[in-house]
Image (cartoon, rainbow, N blue to C red; front, top):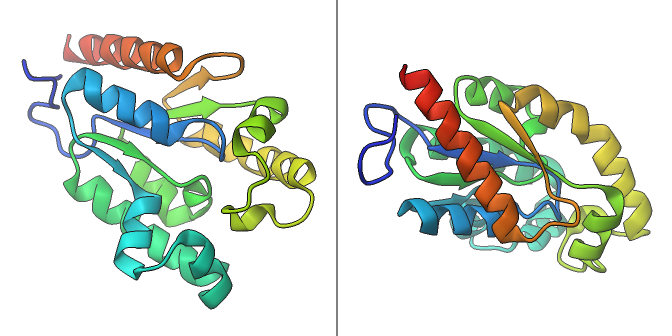
Length: 185
């Protein structure tokens, strides 16, 4: 249950973890939730880039996806253990079985986005290494592959299509707060 200042009193780990594919709005919604609740915001993609001293794109090119995923797994584990605010995970983080295990027991919200909205939001994907080639086809393949995994780790699912980030953040906050109140009973 949150304390008066909005922090997760007596609990360890993030107040909420946002998962979903690229273009779902995880980073944007995380920032809005952090502002609303007065909590710090953390993004594991930013953590990986900062610790490696390279952009995600450069990590993929220079070291490959396997190396990036290992760094990502470590970044997620660290964030889940020490961060008590709002946490946004990279789109592929949930593919790792160890990460899925670590997410158990945390409030995880899957920000679901459809193909059309995802493609509009990621644009040409020049900074997104997994979108090399046909953007629409790659996004569709990633959505199809990952949606069942996102749903499996999520405690809540919020649709983001045709909605503003503020509207999505409001729904996430309302549903997380309701769940916290229910669990406090």
